Image (cartoon, rainbow, N blue to C red; front, top):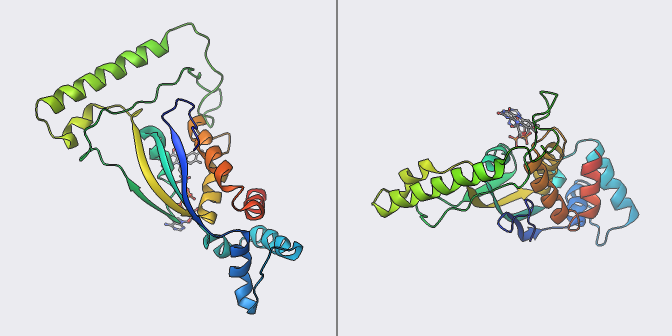
Length: 218
Ligand SMILES: Cc1cc2nc3c(=O)[nH]c(=O)nc-3n(C[C@H](O)[C@H](O)[C@H](O)COP(=O)(O)OP(=O)(O)OC[C@H]3O[C@@H](n4cnc5c(N)ncnc54)[C@H](O)[C@@H]3O)c2cc1C
């Protein structure tokens, strides 16, 4: 289990996976009516060739299933990645347990370039942490008041902030995760989503070492 935001709440957990580097190889080799029983050097070369030349279908055969807990403002970005993914998410229409909120301990400054979302960590000149914590405590208090007084969870949730955690089960192909990782490990991506992409990459890499390396390089 990974804790990308390092707050003991965020998580990325591998539930299941189907396939290995050989799955990619044998999906490609079926076109020649061939099968590899164990991965040899020629198979690694084939994997690199496929990745280099954009033959993505063999990389879409292996599947990975994760359970991910992330703040809503990051999930909004994560869910933009659609092709090759299936997701089921916890619903606050049915769940009225105390919401969990993400609270960073460091606040980044605005970046000089508009293409970069944030810059260096700001000095402790202003107590952003206390201000954010007060806003969060008030939001949770208001939510609990609505629930206690009979408001349905599907409306009461409107007072909750974007920092609230959501949780979902996600199944994606190796190809889909490689595309996501490439886009979200990029320094232009938001820092928090980079940390999630790194956690996913760290989980997948040992399962498909040759294919992940080839996809990352091309
Ligand atoms: C740094 C960064 C900043 C971003 N900023 C914004 C932003 O400001 N606003 C915003 O809305 N989004 C933003 N995005 C999201 C971005 O526009 C994409 O939606 C997201 O990266 C998912 O891309 P994907 O290629 O994995 O998409 P998927 O939807 O998973 O598609 C995968 C691939 O399938 C193909 N494909 C999918 N749909 C079609 C289609 N209809 N027609 C033809 N081919 C298709 C494309 O080749 C695509 O790359 C940002 C992403 C990044 C990484």
